Amino acid sequence: MTETKQSIHGAWSSRFAFILAATGSAVGLGNIWKFPYITGENGGGAFVLVYLLCVALIGIPIMIAETMMGRRGRQSPINTMQTLARDAGADESWHYLGWLGVVTGFLILSYYSVIAGWAISYVFKSLSGSFYGDGDSVDHIAKLFDGFIGSPMQLVFWHSLFMLATMAVVVRGVQGGLEKAVRFLMPSLFALLLVMVGYAMSSGAYQQGLDFMFDPDFSKIDGHSILTAMGHAFFTLSLGMGAIMVYGSYLPKGVSIAKTSFIVAGADTAVALLAGIAIFPIVFANNLEPSSGPGLIFQTLPIAFGQMSGGLIFGTLFFILLVFAALSSSISLIEPAVAWLVENHNITRKKACVWAGLLTWLLGLGTVFSFNIWSDFKLFDRTIFNLLDYLTANLLLPIGGFFVAVFAGWIMLRQHSEEELEIGSAPAYDLWRFLVRYVSPAAVFLVFLNVVGVL
Ligand code: PHE
Image 1 (cartoon, rainbow, N blue to C red):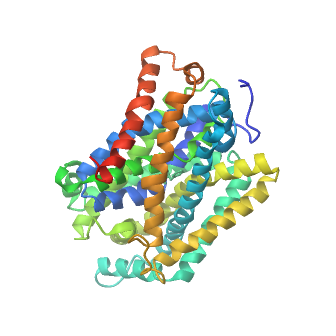
Image 2: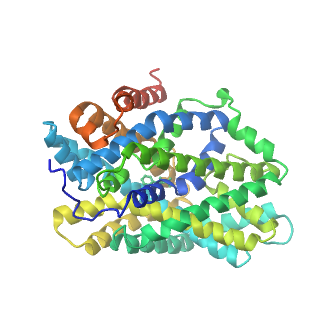
Image 3: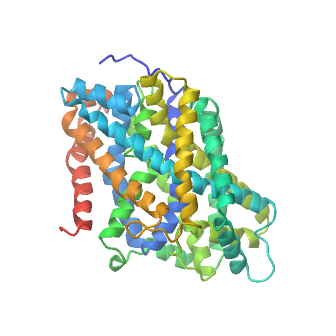
């Protein structure tokens, strides 16, 4: 294992650049689109509490492990796993863990891009004043959304545009445009969320929204909600598929991995909670259903934008920032595959992007049609979109994360992880090791057992 080796794909310019990129990966549709609607579907407070516990006990230790493994391996997750396994004297079939990540990334991006396409389209809807209608605004916004997702041509168009944007950034390498863009977009998104929270405070149902999110009622959750909460902790922190691993492989030496992981996880959680605090009061003030599903933010926020002063500007800005948040996540979903193609097939980054992008785009059509012409087509009782979402977030990411924890805790030599993490204080390192060896894998395992009814 050469300590000074750099990734052939380049390196982040600084610790701050890594924090921005990793936060960019973590903060995305998961926080603003998905967290509110799954919280709504799973009854609120108790679900939020389980999610927060999962972030702390499973997410953060695994984020530290993934970043550490990436930085030590310095290659795409597939090759990193192979190198690390060899170094530890373990079986090289550990590189299949890298493969699992690549496949999971493809599957996630295929539907992620469709939803991000919705967000792009809503930028233009806002700008053209479509959120203002005569008569009942709730009804008007609902019709706008239903008409939109009912049109396969429109969804294909916006999905294609988002995939093109993603590939355009990935071709340039992550450091090029994105490092700079994220630098001011992330703080702007945060500020705009605060504006929305401000509006929610005045909406008349602020307290009701807060109670829904923070007053746990455990009778509202079951094994399935717990699995969803845990899966979401992986999804929102970009863990279990190699995104954080590949970003870690571009991380210079001498940066504290533990500290950066706390910062990234903290920022990610803050954005999700703010999004919920902004959205639920609007839901209750307008007598909407919290459990209305993936359309939730598209059916609630436009009502607020249509009513508040300056709503046209705020609405437009909000959806622009949401698109950028999605973009800084989508590039990390495809980066492990692109890095591997470049390393192992000796093709240019550009070619790798074209192939990876085309494949994802094609897969995404399944999600597009699941909202309209194929909405009655169900496998395991789920539409294609629901199936992909369940398979990736609730199964593949936790399985990937489980094996990352097992590898970091049990397979890698203690000396290697200690060296790489440079935590300094022995108790802090021991605590991390205890968490990845026992707590995180056991928790994932128990949640799975519980959902299949063994517990
Ligand atoms: N974390 C991203 C979000 O919350 C999604 C993502 C998942 C990105 C897995 C990379 C890997 O939107």
